[in-house]
Image 1 (cartoon, rainbow, N blue to C red):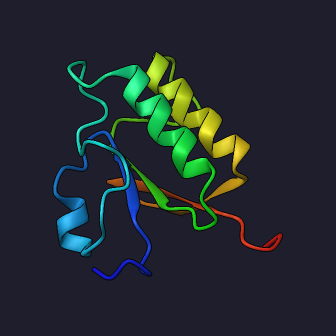
Image 2 (cartoon, rainbow, N blue to C red):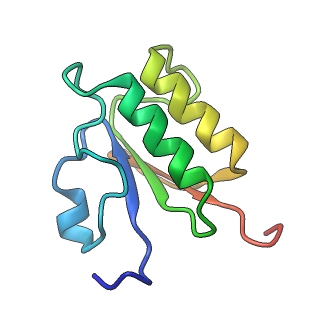
Length: 105
């Protein structure tokens, strides 16, 4: 994957998806939803990513509904999506994909 290509953030039942899609994970860890991965690290990651011009796709695995997420990490992700003008761009029985608006589109 070249540096110019889009990275992704995955949450939930999506391990290895970055490998299948040949995209880099832009967070410090692939398994950001695990309790062993720090809220503060995710917060720092999302803050860093928010400051970048190119926004990664966010892919949420089956069983995680962004509209009903209530945990601290889920709230961080929801806030990141809202603050960075993301929209749902794809939904299936397995994944929901969010992408940031580009130039108002």
